[in-house]
Image (cartoon, rainbow, N blue to C red; front, top):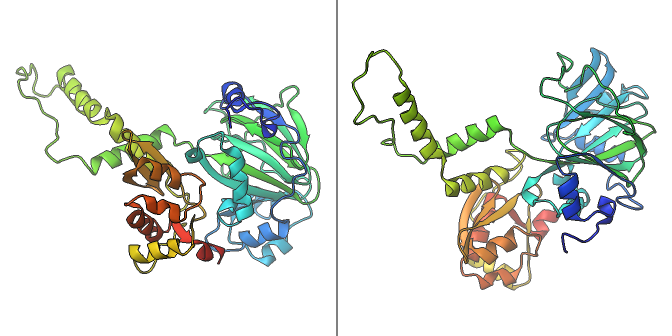
Length: 391
């Protein structure tokens, strides 16, 4: 599809127009982004997920037993939900797309953005009055109303120094002023896009309010610097060190002079200034699974010959829920395939296919390196057979 094609889910804007005028710049309200939308799961099903081990869930109570804006972390029990009042609380469940295929399917509507930028789909449930307070996030998000109605009020961009309430596990702003004409009630199928650092406040207006939040990952500068330094440090030889051959005699042996600082600076710059290494690190960090235990490696190694036979007999592989793939060309024929935080060099068309939503069937066997690569990806938990996925 052309980037100039109008997209109903963007209110008739093309992908190019949205990225030019709104992405990371200003909010966009889209009425009827998903006409006749039916939420992929019911409130009871969301509560069931929040009761399971290894699923990240939070309960936010505006007036909790231990004080205002109490935050509890799952897994929860039936007794937890039984004690809750009829209003003014919110259940948040992260990465629902990892567990509900129908929720994961929603992400295919967002292919006008890089796949590796997607983080997860969080779903919130709230009875009337439920909210998490006026707050600010540091990532892009599309807020799709799934069921019931929610009122959204926006307060404009806020700085890093904006005061927030202390002592609670939420970034609730101490001061929040609604901007003119930035106050809407969203109904099922309506969607609101918010850039990072935009103050917002969403309050449930009805029973059984479900909101789906499609979030995008963006490492902070401190996270990126630390991660890249660790990546480079694992590869640098011990002999690469500070050196000062040919230096002039010091005027004061205790002084850390400008020449010494300049030599240290140059060592660091020379080490960091490697675009090829940066790309290899970036691909790995942006495809890391959201949760360390999300992927389940196979107990026994996959035999490439058996994999080939299975594909030839009509079986298909699928990408595991929560797996992340990307690719970067090395030249006209070869590329690095990034999969769940790792990278492997292979034929460029093979990398592109594996990182797409294309079927993973016997057609892949046209590439001689495919059997070994597919077996390795299955052993790592990034791929599974269709029947294993359905289980």
